[in-house]
Image 1: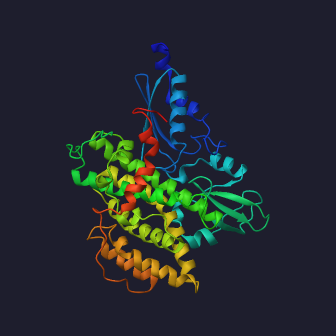
Image 2 (image 1 turned 30 degrees about the horizontal axis):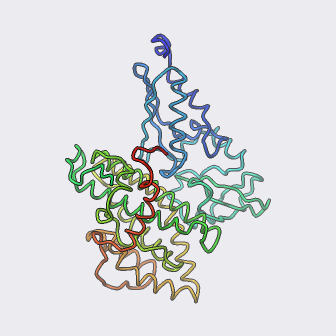
Length: 169
Length: 238
């Protein structure tokens, strides 16, 4: 165990930095902090409380993320308390600008903003979804569903490459 | 047999027994339908549908887990015990979700009927006075949007085909009493209204196949679903 003085020095920023090192287990180009799923960090008497929301409720990475956060916090000499928040407070709008850019660079089209309203089939089929490879908006929906719950499959008619679209949640 | 919970435990501060009952109905529907949808994994008529039904199954089971966790806290047990350790007669699932994997027209009919009914139920739950129930319903609904898009796309596709249309209509007719059974009396008229608006026809006025009775297929499904858990010693970790 670390000494009390060590604990006193720990700031929320230290914890944010440590959690920012944790990659999303299924899309490792982006950290869980970039993903916006870490909602709040509070430190009380050497205990670090993290409020965290899974992207999708059936996300199999949930337990992995929780374990990795706990490990990172113990690595800072503090006791973790990870609270899973299951409400509508997380949305894909909370993915940071840096996170969106990392997604794009890895070939995942970032999600459309939630403000566009609840997605509809017409919007998914006709909306201007941009190919992350060539930038064209001449793309089509191949499948609402993809390899993980948070992704859809699209195809670019211009560069003829399939790509994955992060669903708007 | 493990029976880690009692059916009638004192309710928590916020939730009454009827709320727990409601959570279990919803959770059981999602678990059982998730299992049924996963029966298409590997054998759906198209690869894309294999992916779709597997992904939908994963979402439904995720919703079931969250709902069981909420109910388990009130009942002093855990989500796995609620999902796997109850005898079939204690499940509150609607008979619609219990029917064994159906052929494609019926699969699509059930999928669309269930998602349409579930949307109506979620709209009501989002207005719940209990902030946890309202919050979880709102989060579930964000995901269900995609299930509804998928189901409606298939309804449109099958209705547009000369061969598929009568087969889909027959399936819808057959499953309609089951669909009515997903909802309570007060929400049923909304389902009738939405189904008729989408299909452009009057739905038959029939007795609902309601919650509280079970299809024989449920016991078989539970037998299969709990096989690994029953074979493992109590307290095994996965």
